[in-house]
Length: 124
Image 1 (spheres, helix red, strand yellow):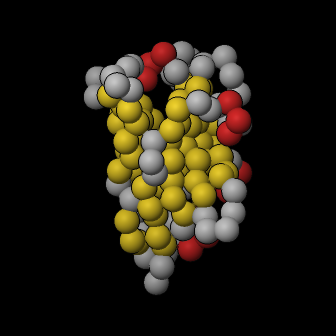
Image 2 (spheres, one colour):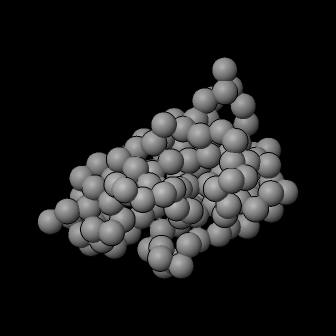
């Protein structure tokens, strides 16, 4: 069974850091693009970052450039999202998903497989 499981969320103070993990089982991530999206209360799902594993190209939303870094450990079959200098506006449920490498990895509608998410709360 193909599964994506996010972990690493939690409560952090503004200015703090977290590293989220997206672990895949039942399939290999290096055949896909992997994206991180987030959904804050009352808002739609927003693209945060993605990585195209066929050429290691990456995308970041303007709101997270310079703060977040996406990376992949092909041996462990995990994609990470390192988040630094967090602010309260980053509070959301963070989801990872997979799409075909030829699709626009920044576009939510291109994704067909999602994890259940991990909660990130940034609060004083």
